[in-house]
Image (cartoon, rainbow, N blue to C red; front, side, top):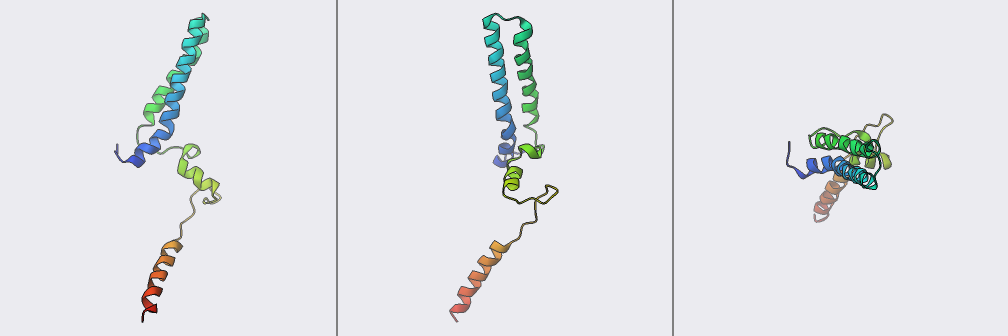
Length: 111
């Protein structure tokens, strides 16, 4: 596992919501227990909450996130940077070329 912030940031895209869902569902289960409902009722949200815990642990490993939850993919999808297959379009280096030509023009103007 890498300690780079980028790797940790990508894993947190799923870990935080999964842990939030875990605690919310466990809280709902505890409230239903305090109300006095039968165990079959309050164990349903608790069991669903405990399913989130292994998923959150799996997200800490450096696996690629699926496209539907990947922030970079969603950004590219919204801004039309994908081809018809959903793959990123090749990026052109026109910005770098423009900067280099501006630098070259300044040097030639002094002659």
